Image 1 (tube, helix red, strand yellow):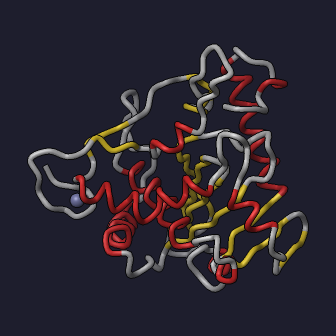
Image 2 (cartoon, helix red, strand yellow):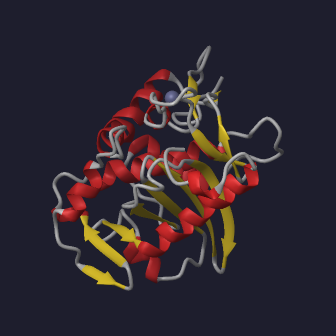
Length: 261
Ligand SMILES: [Zn+2]
């Protein structure tokens, strides 16, 4: 079997988590009779213990993914007790742009915020999801087309950031939606495709395409000052998505959508 990251052949591959295991751990609510997390799956809020896995990578590539992104990310994302080191780090410094509810923080001057690891984690989730299809679906969760290979190369050797992608990172301040998780979803925009997911208090937006509007270059976490954002508008959109998912599931009233799920 061929490892999807190093492309070497192995007798067997690891059962790789599609969303990293650390993300699930932080969603369990031990205070509830059913501690399983709520996730948005197919647009609905679902309480499930199921962790999606697939034989994607060899064990050394699994370790590489952990070392290059996951270990740091899960120490610094929203924690079970509600603390959130990444947001504390951002709010402890001054934003260099603050306009219309959007604050931009330069991680290049924030020693506690490792933009490379933050980017690696996000990109690795999009990549894993491009290799995984839900049992009842025909297409992978996220289709990266011919951008898949430059992304694989970057995740493998960590050297050349693909030039036709932009990765935007938003930290979620609102306690209401910090525990919301959903798998990548995709939409077309003029000049590019946009994929996004939310996990452990961090919202990632990946833009891929030949004609991504120029303004997004400066917003990419791997360009310039390696910016991350806090955005009221993004938080309002995510809150709407969470409320809609709960209504769709018809098991919950909107008032309980905000909270741990
Ligand atoms: Zn490998």
